[in-house]
Length: 126
Image 1 (tube, rainbow, N blue to C red):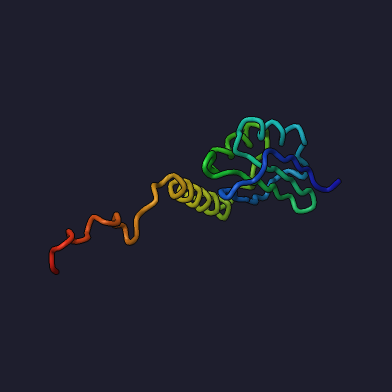
Image 2 (image 1 turned 135 degrees about the horizontal axis):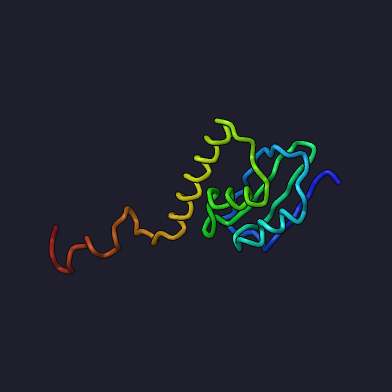
């Protein structure tokens, strides 16, 4: 089997999928289950032995990419440390934080105005 996969709960609208290259040629299924069991927001962990890539799908309203990395390291799953990965990790954190804040934001009125506030009282001319 060239791919180890472990799936959690069903996907939502706020699910993102991130791919990272792992330095190891093999990742155990138990290590994937261990990492996934520590978070409720992880929906899927998949390791492809042919490419050495680990795919992680998670809900950004519950988790951020930077929260997953230490747990992967604790399970002895470490991404290849390069400037490219550090740049991608920073971008992933930024987009996760932005998406999570947009999901939790209150809906705005049209043009950021509450309807009816700027209307003239009845019977008054312009």
